[in-house]
Image 1 (cartoon, rainbow, N blue to C red):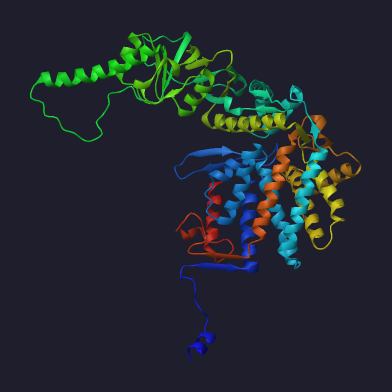
Image 2: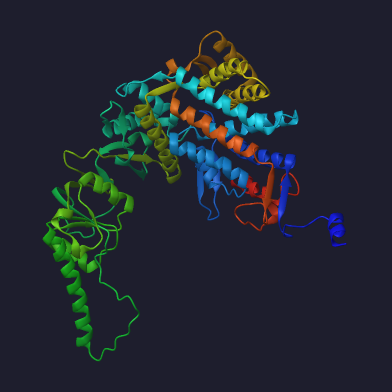
Length: 557
């Protein structure tokens, strides 16, 4: 009897608040979410790309066209969308640039995959075809790439200029590109096997407002944006013996709350004298190490400042942790966590000078030090923030160009050439995977199409002209968005690193395949990752509340 009853009714194994989406609905849901992310950043691609204004929950405003910054700042709590954000983050970590390209290609792959799914082609065949196409495309990138000598400053500066074009750093890109190249050269060493290693840990960046980007400088050593603590302290120390301190020079407080009863003014004075003696002993301990400069990450008591000045010791407090670590690289020595344990062996050596106009300390190390600081200047905070993002990307790209040594033509040239070669390769692929390889080739041509769209040009005409140029044998033919001409972009100085293109292909393909492999979504509650109970965002596609997480994207832009 019980068995018959069970056969007649569905068995419920999930909670009332759970959600489940299966088969085609799951595929449509995932593809829609991923494409929404890709389309959010497409308009920022290229020299003519537009910027986004992002306002966070605290009211802070970020104006940028940097793909990874946009995606990280937006309030995304959709699980599939976050997988596409990871594409941008991986691209940024591995290649330094090309985040928008990687995300846009991932979105286009999924769009083309959706068309194949409607033709009843199984996701497994599409995934295999995309994988084959990605492997072939990366091999073709290596074949197309041109080797560059790390000493070819003119060409490597063009890499930096290409990276900064369309960003806040574009107006002074020639000046900044020269600073970036010189900075990378300073921290590049040749390994035993003949390869070049770039240590960007020895390149620091500081920003200043109130001046133009063209007045940015490359400084040997470090910059500390602090003031001397006391008027009687020296402002310049040529033979500096520097103590890097991560311990406050203040009166030590008890670990537990205490109450003290005082019967007379003499007792109060005794307590004050004891505190003063504590500070005097700490300063005396610093003097005994031989230090004449102290950079402290924590606080320094007013009385201690007086005693330090009396001993002729220059001191700065509340120095950033990152600055302290960089100073360690420049000066040597150690970062000391207990002033009482400091010794002469912990000191770093160099010179410290004061620029009163810029209100900065310039710190230079010895002959072995090769750390440098890029001092970036801009008119306002928003300008200098975007300038810093653009220069950081260019630093990463130039570093890759020097260490990897392979460059390709920009302006959509590499994508059109890869698409052409993949279509030839598709003829050798058997089965339905051939259609996926062709779809992959079509997805790559999104890049020149979007470059043309963002420049106000006709994307179809541009693509037709590009295909014709490549079929005629010009594998470096790309779009000059400023003149609207099809030209050899490598010769024009629009060059990108081969590594960035390979990484974009790899990340985009893996993300797209990961999304396509999902045919069932089971959520314990609201289908989002942020636990957002606000249902007003609604689901753009209907009853799937988790898509409401994408609503934050529209509000952010």
